[in-house]
Length: 575
Image (cartoon, helix red, strand yellow):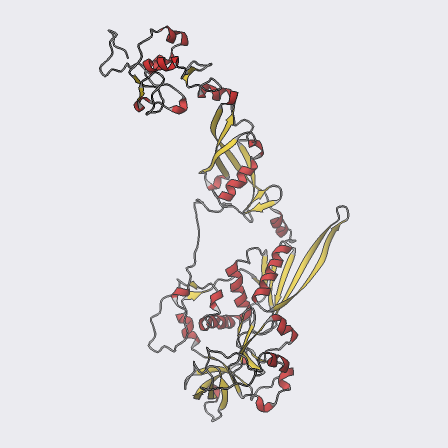
């Protein structure tokens, strides 16, 4: 305030109350004209001098958004004379010049740039599959406060925002159970005479339940459009267990509407033909198989000329599993490097891996080669018998004939004398050659197939010279199964599937598959192995039998993501 005697207070600054600026324009012009100030207090840049010739002081700056002047009338009068300040045409408040010649408060009362933009919008949500509808027919999965959900919400109001410029958009927190999504938008628009006005407002999106077409077909029991039927005519399910882990690792089971396990295979049901074709392509690259395709007409609309088909893909996997003894045709054995006709299957991946137990020759047979020269398994795991090693002799130098194929560097050729554990009270022993010389010692137990006392009916085996057939073919070393299961501190994931009937031998076959993973590092490279935290650590046994184990470095931590409060990134709560 000015002093009563009209003198300037100490400090050289003329102080007035902010209410002085609420005088009418005529009253302001009626005041006497003071001399030019030595310092300018208007709200300009702190480093440049104003038109009144004085240096600006940053301490007198006011809120630039409100477009008000500084609190020094002395500076205001000279700046007004220099045409740096105009008066609002509505309320008379001094403002910097702008094309509308109005202050921000009055301009907002005259113009609403958010007019025409809906403040409440409905979003369709399917609570069965937790997906949102993106018009016209696309359903997409979005987590709360995710970038995908923000894009979907903005597309709902895109048509009404064609005349404004979107500056910023973000989520406001809402209770997950409220079925409300709030977006805070910042927009700009050019208004009167080229002035640009910026406004912040909130749009509320209401979640409305609507069942998608896929879930509607599921409820109507007409849910699948394509089915992939995978079959393998074997007595063991090792290939299916391995295939299940590959599907889980590549997450191909997520698109399946239903997975049903039957006696000789498994069925995958899909809502679209494209998803089924993707599974067929994956199987053809993973296991040796062949496929057949058929389709059945369900309905036909003669007016729109549309057809409704159900497609069926039949996938047949080669009937050979790991640890099977097979007899090749002479033509196939010759094409594989003149290897013996009797071979052992060591692994089934995208090809069949075979080894000759007499010469250590190895070969791979793909699906096309197998179906041109098919061969069957001579025995199943139930027919394997347990033998004990009585004597062993390692064969160091083994010369192969002309045109021989590759030899295995992971195995050692040896000659053994073995005896059945069920015939220990007799003196009957068997002589054979094996590829397990690097694993076996005298007194070890080994699983093998007894050719001498078996009645086998096979097309290629019956044509072989009986003198060339071995008495026993050894398959793998035997360990204490209960001790291995007790020390196993890892586990595998399983697909959720319907079972028509549970075989009593399935548990034993699954344990065989777990043992194969422990014994074959190359096989478990394609499998995700998780540490089992529920298993109690077992101290190392003093009488360790040397059974192979899986190290902790090969195990993954199983993650269990759950967000009870529905925070950022959580799924929509429907309960």
